[in-house]
Amino acid sequence: MRLTLSDPKTKKSYNVEADEKTILHLLGKKIKDEVDLGMISPNLKGIITGGSDKQGFPMHTKLDFENSKKILTAKGVGFRASKKGERRRVRVAGRFITDKTAQVNIKLTAGDTTGFDERFPKQKKEEDTLGASGKGKKKK
Image 1 (cartoon, rainbow, N blue to C red):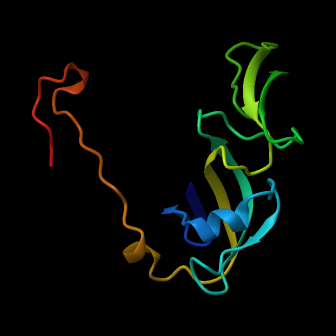
Image 2 (image 1 turned 90 degrees about the vertical axis):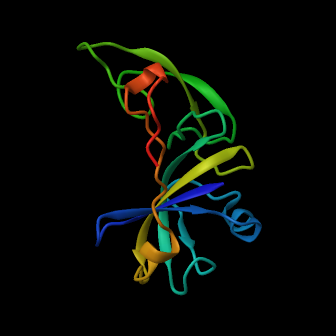
Image 3 (image 1 turned 120 degrees about the horizontal axis):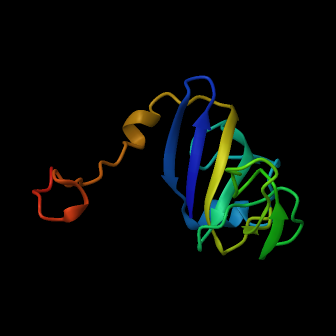
């Protein structure tokens, strides 16, 4: 499970790969719950703001169960209307964190994030120089 920790003070986000102890601590929690992240850094606390399951469906705050479901929506999580009055049936996941959850978004509310840049460096992706053709050289 991947945790995305967002710090509103510095306006930075950090991607953290969660260990088994952290995953067990988060199971059963839901969106808008406050969680203690002391296993990542001392005195670190945050609020769960969202996430997605292993199939890529976003978590929705109004679904009080663990599975995914199709809902009819005009706007909001999982859908952005291109025309006025457009509605669409989209699949979203429930708001509870389960073993099927792949990513959890957490907004930090308390604690110190100094040193996070060194502990969780940004990962660089390989890009083609000529685009999607795949014939170009890869940058390193």
